[in-house]
Length: 123
Length: 226
Image 1 (cartoon, chains in turn yellow, orange):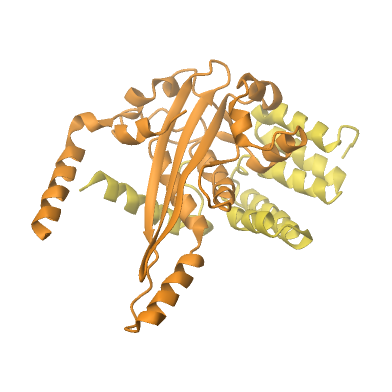
Image 2 (cartoon, chains in turn red, blue):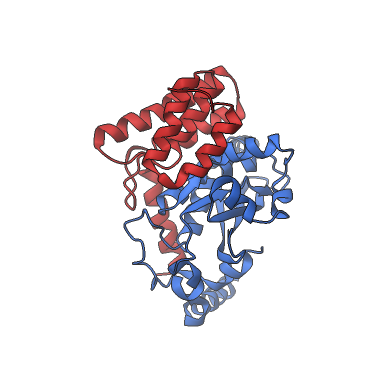
Protein backbone atom coordinates (compact mmCIF):
# COMPACT_ATOMS: atom_id res chain seq x y z
CA UNK A 1 0.00 0.00 0.00
CA UNK A 2 1.24 3.46 -0.82
CA UNK A 3 3.21 4.71 2.20
CA UNK A 4 1.60 8.13 2.12
CA UNK A 5 -1.92 6.75 2.26
CA UNK A 6 -0.97 4.47 5.11
CA UNK A 7 0.59 7.33 7.02
CA UNK A 8 -2.40 9.57 6.39
CA UNK A 9 -4.97 7.02 7.59
CA UNK A 10 -2.89 6.10 10.63
CA UNK A 11 -2.52 9.74 11.58
CA UNK A 12 -6.22 10.48 11.02
CA UNK A 13 -7.28 7.48 13.10
CA UNK A 14 -5.03 8.62 15.94
CA UNK A 15 -6.36 12.16 15.79
CA UNK A 16 -10.00 11.14 15.90
CA UNK A 17 -9.52 9.46 19.26
CA UNK A 18 -7.35 12.34 20.55
CA UNK A 19 -9.51 14.26 22.96
CA UNK A 20 -10.57 11.62 25.47
CA UNK A 21 -7.67 9.23 25.55
CA UNK A 22 -4.13 9.19 26.79
CA UNK A 23 -1.26 9.18 24.34
CA UNK A 24 0.10 5.74 23.42
CA UNK A 25 3.80 6.72 23.57
CA UNK A 26 3.84 8.73 26.78
CA UNK A 27 0.55 8.15 28.58
CA UNK A 28 -0.21 11.88 28.70
CA UNK A 29 -3.78 13.19 28.84
CA UNK A 30 -4.29 16.57 27.17
CA UNK A 31 -8.07 17.04 27.29
CA UNK A 32 -9.12 20.04 25.22
CA UNK A 33 -5.84 21.92 25.76
CA UNK A 34 -5.49 23.28 22.21
CA UNK A 35 -9.19 24.23 22.08
CA UNK A 36 -9.20 26.46 25.16
CA UNK A 37 -5.78 27.88 24.28
CA UNK A 38 -7.02 28.75 20.78
CA UNK A 39 -10.05 30.57 22.27
CA UNK A 40 -7.76 32.41 24.67
CA UNK A 41 -5.55 33.61 21.83
CA UNK A 42 -8.31 34.63 19.45
CA UNK A 43 -10.76 36.10 21.98
CA UNK A 44 -8.54 37.22 24.87
CA UNK A 45 -10.26 38.27 28.07
CA UNK A 46 -11.28 37.12 31.52
CA UNK A 47 -13.76 34.55 30.23
CA UNK A 48 -11.39 32.72 27.91
CA UNK A 49 -8.55 32.93 30.44
CA UNK A 50 -10.75 31.38 33.14
CA UNK A 51 -11.83 28.61 30.77
CA UNK A 52 -8.22 27.80 29.88
CA UNK A 53 -7.21 27.80 33.55
CA UNK A 54 -10.11 25.41 34.24
CA UNK A 55 -8.94 23.14 31.43
CA UNK A 56 -5.35 23.08 32.74
CA UNK A 57 -6.66 22.22 36.22
CA UNK A 58 -8.88 19.51 34.79
CA UNK A 59 -5.91 17.95 32.95
CA UNK A 60 -3.94 17.94 36.22
CA UNK A 61 -6.85 16.47 38.23
CA UNK A 62 -7.45 13.72 35.68
CA UNK A 63 -3.75 12.86 35.54
CA UNK A 64 -3.50 12.68 39.33
CA UNK A 65 -6.62 10.56 39.55
CA UNK A 66 -5.29 8.10 36.98
CA UNK A 67 -1.79 8.08 38.44
CA UNK A 68 -0.18 9.34 35.22
CA UNK A 69 2.39 12.08 34.89
CA UNK A 70 1.02 15.56 34.14
CA UNK A 71 2.14 16.53 30.61
CA UNK A 72 5.21 18.79 30.17
CA UNK A 73 4.54 22.46 30.79
CA UNK A 74 0.98 22.10 32.14
CA UNK A 75 1.83 22.98 35.76
CA UNK A 76 4.09 25.75 34.46
CA UNK A 77 1.44 27.20 32.19
CA UNK A 78 -1.19 27.01 34.93
CA UNK A 79 1.19 28.88 37.24
CA UNK A 80 1.77 31.46 34.51
CA UNK A 81 -1.98 31.97 33.92
CA UNK A 82 -2.72 32.16 37.66
CA UNK A 83 -0.09 34.88 37.99
CA UNK A 84 -1.89 36.75 35.21
CA UNK A 85 -4.97 36.80 37.46
CA UNK A 86 -2.87 37.83 40.48
CA UNK A 87 -3.19 34.56 42.32
CA UNK A 88 0.52 34.74 43.09
CA UNK A 89 1.03 32.15 45.80
CA UNK A 90 -1.00 29.55 43.87
CA UNK A 91 1.05 30.48 40.82
CA UNK A 92 4.32 29.89 42.66
CA UNK A 93 3.05 26.52 43.90
CA UNK A 94 2.28 25.38 40.36
CA UNK A 95 5.63 26.56 39.05
CA UNK A 96 7.37 24.54 41.75
CA UNK A 97 5.31 21.48 40.86
CA UNK A 98 6.67 21.73 37.32
CA UNK A 99 10.25 21.45 38.61
CA UNK A 100 9.31 18.45 40.76
CA UNK A 101 7.65 16.69 37.81
CA UNK A 102 10.34 17.66 35.26
CA UNK A 103 13.69 18.55 36.88
CA UNK A 104 15.06 19.73 33.51
CA UNK A 105 12.56 22.59 33.65
CA UNK A 106 14.43 24.34 36.47
CA UNK A 107 16.27 26.97 34.36
CA UNK A 108 13.06 27.76 32.49
CA UNK A 109 10.99 28.02 35.70
CA UNK A 110 13.59 30.28 37.30
CA UNK A 111 13.42 32.51 34.23
CA UNK A 112 9.63 32.65 34.31
CA UNK A 113 9.60 33.34 38.07
CA UNK A 114 11.80 36.40 37.53
CA UNK A 115 9.74 37.45 34.50
CA UNK A 116 6.56 37.33 36.59
CA UNK A 117 8.19 39.09 39.53
CA UNK A 118 7.40 36.21 41.87
CA UNK A 119 10.85 35.75 43.45
CA UNK A 120 9.72 37.04 46.82
CA UNK A 121 6.53 35.01 47.01
CA UNK A 122 6.40 32.03 49.28
CA UNK A 123 3.52 29.63 48.89
CA UNK B 1 -7.23 11.53 -20.87
CA UNK B 2 -7.82 8.70 -18.42
CA UNK B 3 -4.93 6.71 -19.83
CA UNK B 4 -2.63 9.69 -19.32
CA UNK B 5 -3.69 10.02 -15.69
CA UNK B 6 -3.17 6.28 -15.10
CA UNK B 7 0.28 6.38 -16.69
CA UNK B 8 1.35 9.39 -14.60
CA UNK B 9 0.01 7.77 -11.44
CA UNK B 10 1.92 4.59 -12.21
CA UNK B 11 5.13 6.55 -12.74
CA UNK B 12 4.75 8.40 -9.44
CA UNK B 13 3.88 5.18 -7.64
CA UNK B 14 6.93 3.33 -8.95
CA UNK B 15 9.21 6.30 -8.35
CA UNK B 16 7.94 6.40 -4.78
CA UNK B 17 8.75 2.73 -4.33
CA UNK B 18 12.40 3.08 -5.33
CA UNK B 19 14.44 2.45 -2.19
CA UNK B 20 16.71 5.42 -2.64
CA UNK B 21 13.76 7.80 -2.06
CA UNK B 22 13.47 6.68 1.55
CA UNK B 23 15.83 6.58 4.51
CA UNK B 24 15.61 5.11 7.97
CA UNK B 25 15.44 7.53 10.88
CA UNK B 26 19.00 6.81 11.98
CA UNK B 27 20.37 7.22 8.41
CA UNK B 28 18.63 10.56 8.04
CA UNK B 29 19.16 11.93 11.56
CA UNK B 30 22.17 10.25 13.21
CA UNK B 31 22.58 13.08 15.76
CA UNK B 32 19.27 12.11 17.33
CA UNK B 33 20.63 8.69 18.32
CA UNK B 34 23.62 9.73 20.40
CA UNK B 35 24.14 12.21 23.20
CA UNK B 36 23.26 15.08 20.87
CA UNK B 37 19.60 14.13 21.09
CA UNK B 38 17.79 16.93 22.97
CA UNK B 39 15.40 16.62 25.88
CA UNK B 40 14.29 20.24 26.39
CA UNK B 41 13.11 22.00 23.25
CA UNK B 42 12.17 25.65 22.87
CA UNK B 43 9.48 25.94 20.21
CA UNK B 44 9.70 29.36 18.64
CA UNK B 45 6.37 30.90 17.46
CA UNK B 46 5.80 30.05 13.80
CA UNK B 47 7.34 32.09 11.02
CA UNK B 48 4.41 32.81 8.76
CA UNK B 49 5.29 33.28 5.09
CA UNK B 50 1.68 33.28 3.95
CA UNK B 51 -0.88 36.06 3.73
CA UNK B 52 -3.16 34.22 6.17
CA UNK B 53 -2.44 36.09 9.41
CA UNK B 54 -4.37 33.62 11.55
CA UNK B 55 -2.26 30.67 10.39
CA UNK B 56 0.30 31.32 13.16
CA UNK B 57 -2.33 30.84 15.88
CA UNK B 58 -3.38 27.46 14.54
CA UNK B 59 0.19 26.29 14.60
CA UNK B 60 1.19 27.80 17.95
CA UNK B 61 -1.68 26.20 19.87
CA UNK B 62 -1.25 22.73 18.37
CA UNK B 63 2.53 22.18 18.40
CA UNK B 64 3.21 21.57 22.11
CA UNK B 65 1.22 18.31 22.33
CA UNK B 66 2.92 16.38 19.52
CA UNK B 67 6.42 17.45 20.65
CA UNK B 68 5.62 16.24 24.18
CA UNK B 69 3.90 13.09 22.94
CA UNK B 70 6.98 12.20 20.93
CA UNK B 71 8.90 12.13 24.23
CA UNK B 72 10.49 15.59 24.51
CA UNK B 73 10.07 18.42 27.01
CA UNK B 74 8.68 21.39 25.04
CA UNK B 75 8.75 24.77 26.71
CA UNK B 76 5.29 26.39 26.39
CA UNK B 77 5.25 28.52 23.20
CA UNK B 78 3.06 31.25 24.61
CA UNK B 79 5.34 31.93 27.56
CA UNK B 80 8.37 32.07 25.27
CA UNK B 81 6.51 34.52 23.05
CA UNK B 82 5.59 36.81 25.96
CA UNK B 83 9.14 36.82 27.31
CA UNK B 84 10.52 37.68 23.85
CA UNK B 85 7.93 40.39 23.35
CA UNK B 86 9.02 42.07 26.56
CA UNK B 87 12.61 42.05 25.27
CA UNK B 88 11.41 43.78 22.10
CA UNK B 89 11.69 40.66 19.98
CA UNK B 90 8.41 40.63 18.12
CA UNK B 91 9.33 38.54 15.15
CA UNK B 92 10.48 34.95 14.94
CA UNK B 93 12.56 35.98 11.95
CA UNK B 94 14.59 38.16 14.38
CA UNK B 95 15.05 35.13 16.62
CA UNK B 96 16.53 33.17 13.74
CA UNK B 97 19.39 35.63 13.56
CA UNK B 98 20.32 35.17 17.23
CA UNK B 99 22.90 32.67 18.46
CA UNK B 100 21.09 29.53 19.65
CA UNK B 101 23.20 29.44 22.83
CA UNK B 102 20.84 32.14 24.15
CA UNK B 103 18.15 29.50 24.45
CA UNK B 104 20.41 27.30 26.50
CA UNK B 105 21.31 30.19 28.81
CA UNK B 106 17.77 31.54 29.25
CA UNK B 107 15.66 28.41 29.21
CA UNK B 108 18.07 25.51 29.70
CA UNK B 109 17.03 24.30 26.24
CA UNK B 110 19.03 21.66 24.37
CA UNK B 111 17.46 22.53 21.04
CA UNK B 112 15.28 25.08 19.25
CA UNK B 113 12.46 24.14 16.89
CA UNK B 114 11.79 26.62 14.10
CA UNK B 115 8.64 26.14 12.09
CA UNK B 116 7.83 28.02 8.91
CA UNK B 117 4.31 28.09 7.51
CA UNK B 118 4.96 28.06 3.78
CA UNK B 119 1.44 27.50 2.55
CA UNK B 120 -2.00 28.29 3.91
CA UNK B 121 -4.13 28.61 0.83
CA UNK B 122 -7.77 28.54 0.22
CA UNK B 123 -8.34 28.07 -3.46
CA UNK B 124 -11.65 28.32 -5.15
CA UNK B 125 -12.84 27.02 -8.48
CA UNK B 126 -16.47 28.15 -8.24
CA UNK B 127 -18.08 25.10 -6.68
CA UNK B 128 -14.97 23.20 -5.75
CA UNK B 129 -12.62 24.42 -3.10
CA UNK B 130 -9.76 23.14 -1.08
CA UNK B 131 -7.42 24.24 1.64
CA UNK B 132 -3.68 23.56 1.31
CA UNK B 133 -1.44 23.79 4.33
CA UNK B 134 2.31 23.34 4.21
CA UNK B 135 4.89 23.63 6.99
CA UNK B 136 8.65 23.17 7.37
CA UNK B 137 10.32 22.13 10.62
CA UNK B 138 13.97 22.59 11.59
CA UNK B 139 15.44 21.48 14.95
CA UNK B 140 18.78 23.07 15.86
CA UNK B 141 21.15 22.20 18.70
CA UNK B 142 21.84 25.04 21.16
CA UNK B 143 25.30 23.69 21.92
CA UNK B 144 26.70 22.77 18.50
CA UNK B 145 24.35 24.78 16.24
CA UNK B 146 23.94 21.77 13.96
CA UNK B 147 20.62 20.79 12.42
CA UNK B 148 19.50 17.74 14.38
CA UNK B 149 16.27 17.11 12.48
CA UNK B 150 14.30 18.67 9.70
CA UNK B 151 11.18 17.80 7.74
CA UNK B 152 8.24 19.23 5.84
CA UNK B 153 4.58 18.29 5.53
CA UNK B 154 1.70 19.39 3.36
CA UNK B 155 -1.93 18.43 3.29
CA UNK B 156 -4.78 19.35 1.00
CA UNK B 157 -8.32 19.25 2.36
CA UNK B 158 -11.33 19.30 0.09
CA UNK B 159 -13.84 21.82 1.41
CA UNK B 160 -16.29 21.64 -1.48
CA UNK B 161 -19.94 21.45 -0.45
CA UNK B 162 -22.17 18.55 -1.47
CA UNK B 163 -23.96 19.51 -4.64
CA UNK B 164 -27.55 20.63 -4.14
CA UNK B 165 -28.27 20.76 -7.85
CA UNK B 166 -28.68 24.54 -7.68
CA UNK B 167 -25.50 26.31 -8.82
CA UNK B 168 -25.94 29.46 -6.76
CA UNK B 169 -26.63 27.52 -3.58
CA UNK B 170 -23.56 25.39 -4.24
CA UNK B 171 -21.34 28.44 -4.69
CA UNK B 172 -22.50 29.99 -1.43
CA UNK B 173 -22.36 26.68 0.38
CA UNK B 174 -18.78 26.03 -0.74
CA UNK B 175 -17.75 29.51 0.31
CA UNK B 176 -19.31 29.05 3.76
CA UNK B 177 -17.80 25.60 4.23
CA UNK B 178 -14.38 26.88 3.30
CA UNK B 179 -14.68 29.98 5.46
CA UNK B 180 -15.77 28.08 8.53
CA UNK B 181 -13.46 25.12 8.03
CA UNK B 182 -12.01 24.25 11.39
CA UNK B 183 -8.31 24.73 10.87
CA UNK B 184 -7.20 23.38 14.24
CA UNK B 185 -7.56 19.70 13.22
CA UNK B 186 -5.85 20.52 9.93
CA UNK B 187 -2.87 22.04 11.76
CA UNK B 188 -2.78 19.01 14.07
CA UNK B 189 -2.74 16.71 11.06
CA UNK B 190 0.19 18.52 9.42
CA UNK B 191 2.22 18.37 12.64
CA UNK B 192 1.40 14.67 13.03
CA UNK B 193 2.49 13.93 9.44
CA UNK B 194 5.84 15.62 10.00
CA UNK B 195 6.45 13.87 13.30
CA UNK B 196 6.16 10.42 11.73
CA UNK B 197 9.78 11.12 10.77
CA UNK B 198 10.83 12.47 14.19
CA UNK B 199 12.88 10.12 16.36
CA UNK B 200 11.26 9.38 19.71
CA UNK B 201 12.57 11.25 22.74
CA UNK B 202 13.41 10.23 26.30
CA UNK B 203 9.83 10.16 27.62
CA UNK B 204 8.41 8.01 24.84
CA UNK B 205 7.99 4.24 25.15
CA UNK B 206 9.55 3.98 21.69
CA UNK B 207 12.73 5.82 22.62
CA UNK B 208 15.74 4.32 20.80
CA UNK B 209 13.63 1.52 19.27
CA UNK B 210 12.66 3.38 16.10
CA UNK B 211 16.03 3.90 14.37
CA UNK B 212 15.38 1.45 11.55
CA UNK B 213 11.91 2.73 10.63
CA UNK B 214 12.16 3.43 6.92
CA UNK B 215 9.81 6.41 7.00
CA UNK B 216 11.93 9.42 6.07
CA UNK B 217 11.01 10.57 2.57
CA UNK B 218 14.10 12.38 1.27
CA UNK B 219 12.18 14.91 -0.78
CA UNK B 220 10.30 16.07 2.33
CA UNK B 221 13.48 16.18 4.39
CA UNK B 222 15.35 18.19 1.77
CA UNK B 223 12.46 20.62 1.30
CA UNK B 224 12.82 21.96 4.84
CA UNK B 225 15.25 24.85 4.55
CA UNK B 226 17.14 26.32 7.48
